[in-house]
Image 1 (cartoon, rainbow, N blue to C red):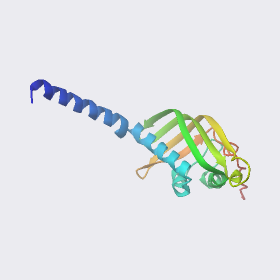
Image 2 (image 1 turned 120 degrees about the vertical axis):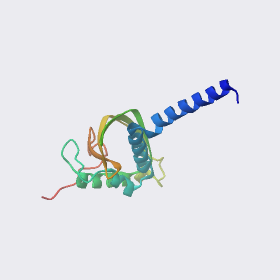
Image 3 (image 1 turned 135 degrees about the vertical axis):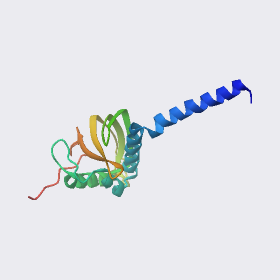
Image 4 (image 1 turned 90 degrees about the horizontal axis):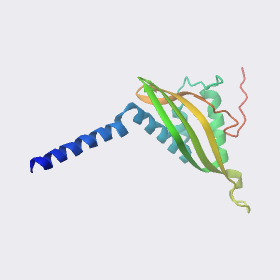
Amino acid sequence: MSRGKTIVVVLLLVIGSVAAYYHYLTPEARVKRFLFRTRDAIEAQNLPVIEGVLADDFRDSFGFGKERWLPIIRGSLSQWKDIKLRFLELEVAVDGNQATARFQANGEATRSSSLGTENLPDRQSYTFRNITLKLARLDGKWQVIGWSNINSETWQVPMPEVNP
């Protein structure tokens, strides 16, 4: 191989390595992959994976924990089918074992109760704005430890009663 071709091949390998690192290996890329896997679990209505996304010490901006949110999530998933979710303007910042993700989300779903009736399925679109997730790497995997701008009305199910 000529010297010129060798330089071109080496340059392409360097560019490819830098691109691979940036898109697949940076801490930010790992958090984004976690978020996309979470989105895929929501779309597939894979409840065990979704439940594992929330850390045991999860607290939302109102102080509600995982034990209060899981019934809301289960109730919401039971009311909707064929869920599609897209992240818009996804920004991730990582600081060691902590991360923050900010984004908008667009989605659509079909109300389960409208399926199998003589009417057309009730397909609805929705937009969540200014979502912030707080994440932590716990035991080597990313989990959500908190969020803001999400409440039970967003999920269209009532907040469950909590017995003291």
